[in-house]
Length: 483
Image: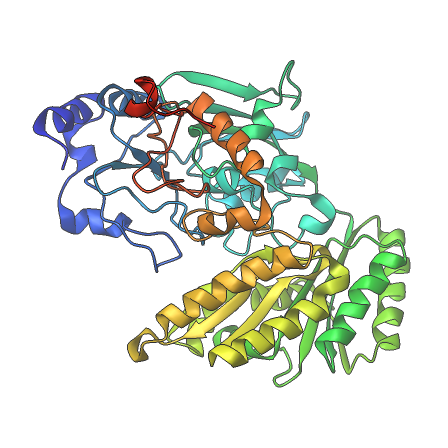
């Protein structure tokens, strides 16, 4: 529990009305989209601008108060779970689009602006913001920066890091710096690249300069059904082998399709083992030629139904089904864990077969919806907490993430490590790798107050505190030595 003096310091830095201490109100901030991890913070701070964010962080630094930055709370790895004796710094009020430059094709926005609002601001100029997480209507750019989010179109256009030129950042000591530049280039180490995807452990971004792209001349979208996951996976490999780089290739299995159809009635075929959403964009002539190639590849691999979007409304309906899938799973299961891992495209069928077997062994269903083009899986482990399945579901979810590493992939594609997968990090990284990460983190945050307990498996030993290495008293006295 923070003492009165500290609370008063926060009230001076902000405004008393913007410092929430009521436990009932604080409970609204106890978790992010991964609701299995919950901690009620001591205080929630609601700064109104970048100056107040910096002032709040300076109070944290002065008094050693741990803090967690929070955007819309849509994260799925427990990255925004609070610290019990710490504060949450909410960026929800920093939601201005500061400028849109159609000549240099960039925009400057505050972290509370939603992903889709950036495109809305750029659209009158014939521009858009390419990264598009499924939650783009509600997730904020600050959270996208923290997690290096991707989305359905990351196969062709890349992730957040490929579209952020610079960030204004409040460091854990309260100082303010700019990482990157208007061109995305910066002399010396790529600190912008270090900060992107650091999951809120290196500081808080208060404004972001993003790259905007010209709206494509043509967009062609199809929805194709297949008799098996393997056949759909072969189509993905065939498209890439043909030298075609689609804007998006998404796959859904039977359970995911069932959930999406119950929620939004997008016109997907119930009962099919797999469906692919393939989208091409670019110059009209190139799109037309490649679209015919994609249709031929689908037919060659046993496509049972091919639906081509004939209008913007039909295209929107196809994407509405795909992007509703996560939330729609609530229609077929009272509870579920959303996992996020990556495997090589060539091992998609293998990993999905292994996941099905693991689910059967655990007595749980697993729905699959994912970015097939880059092998970024999003298995949804379905369970019922009411009948005591939570622990089994959590264990299965963790095993799926570690399976991705076993098959040559990674623990996360875009949702981050957060609290959920920190203990699995040694499955992917050596102790030397992890030590380098700790040192980088300590260079930014030597006192370990910025989103502590996330990403890295800490404490390394029972009772050891995260952050910069601190000699044990016995080591200082010469009784023992560090190996």
